[in-house]
Length: 234
Image (cartoon, rainbow, N blue to C red):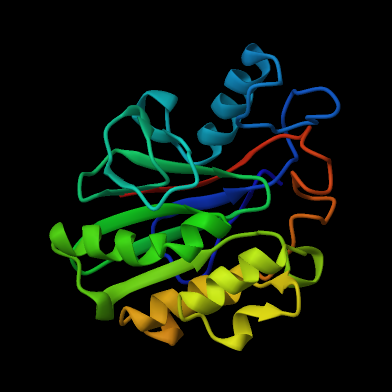
């Protein structure tokens, strides 16, 4: 199974797994990014995976991700930042992940979409809020925005430094977002979303950890691993 979909987004979308591609170990086998795998393998994986969603790579807007809170107005091809938004049909938004959370957004009334890559730095600096704001500039309304949060590293498996936990405390994140030195990125991004008027009932989460065998995990694999994509298209 190449893709996992949410039940709250009535639109072309998916979160990729590590299955159904051509890459060899340690990138086996549906690696959609990174710099260490063979480029021809990554390109073929992208072709295979996108075909399942009836998308061509020539329709994809994707990112050189820099762990920021920068949101780009999507254009086909490569941009620099960590989130994308558009109200244009036929442009697929893609964000990569291998422990960080891919988050997809859809206002089905006003036909605006977004996609965000949420690592701890982007989460701390509220990239979800910035994505919502940029969607609003395109006509989205918060009461209509639905979110789907894909796989990411779980709180139990994500131990961080005292300094990181203290930064989250200083930025107003509640105790539900950390447990001693374990950071809960899923709850932190949900918190940011609800603080910016996304209805809790409109937030779906996969609730699966990237350390599971179906996924790539940068931490589990000590940095030598593949990348998964979260994709959405009007």
